[in-house]
Length: 303
Image (cartoon, rainbow, N blue to C red; front, side, top):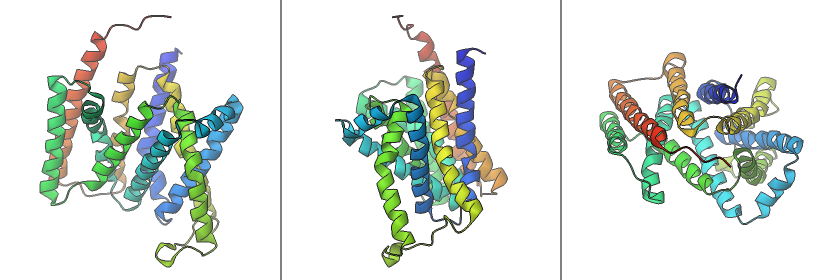
């Protein structure tokens, strides 16, 4: 099996794990969102520390947390934890259709910010794709009488996360390990405050961990659900071109969408159908243009 093929299947595994993760988080619907987020943070750090220890890279993690990149790592930690929290809440509250829409429009929002922040240029096809996506969100807002705030929130936080990650000279595994290391004291503090009953009344919630074995095991497993796809993505990114990875990413929201409609029975109105058709068309236009650009790009020099 070639290295490209190994990377391809690693990326398929990434998208399948992410795309089917609503099933996992729906099983934790009775656990407060913040507790799920806290355990996701803590147990993913445990797994990352094991991986980095095996690789002999714990020193790099210490350097990242004490170097001049700490501000950017902190911003990345805030944006990704916000994204994770919104995603978990959306799944638990029965808004998986909206979460899938958020990750569909993410590449198109990223395209807009690429122009505004990095001065990137767009082809005419890409510009039309962006306009069509904006029109789709407008149609959905008008048809439902409310903006798809969950979708927009997930897309914007993930794009902001991508923007700051672009400026971080750290690999995916090391950077996420640093991010969850910064968040872990907050997660532990929240859990301890809840467990010892010292959380202020408006924020006090029952703890799920330790009261039910299946739930406790699922909360521990949330670390693997977080860390394993990122490790696989890092593996795939070194073997498969980014254009291909970008196109494969759409498998994630597609599986989320199928979970929402086929498994969870969420409402999918005519307005949703129109908006999703417009988004899918915009993505097809954008992807076609990106593929043409990648084929015209000069090959990288060896050395």
